[in-house]
Length: 83
Ligand SMILES: [Zn+2]
Image (cartoon, rainbow, N blue to C red; front, side, top):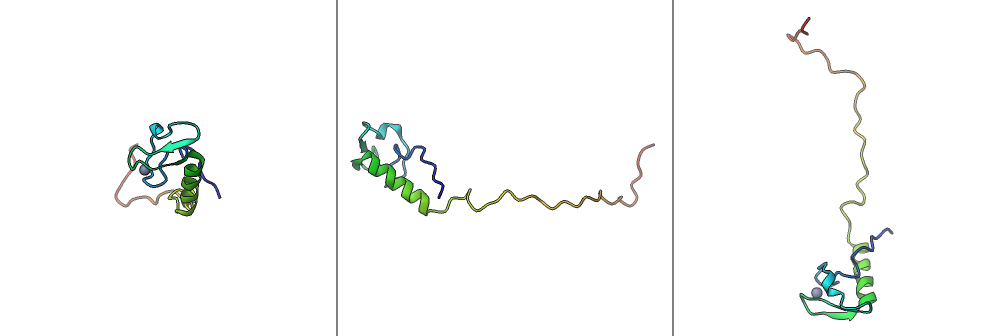
């Protein structure tokens, strides 16, 4: 399971608000929106957990290679190339 841990320590696990101001200290987290306060590591863990559960739009979408036919476009009727 790949989870981008970026900003998880700054994001409110309730509001999903990413705000660096939420991180009062290294150990404490307090949301400026809902005033939730909890252990910063616990909050980050909640964010990682939620991110891991929720399907990411980037996951599952493989870079599809369009199957292009190697044959050139058929000549259009009535169109003539300039000399
Ligand atoms: Zn919050």
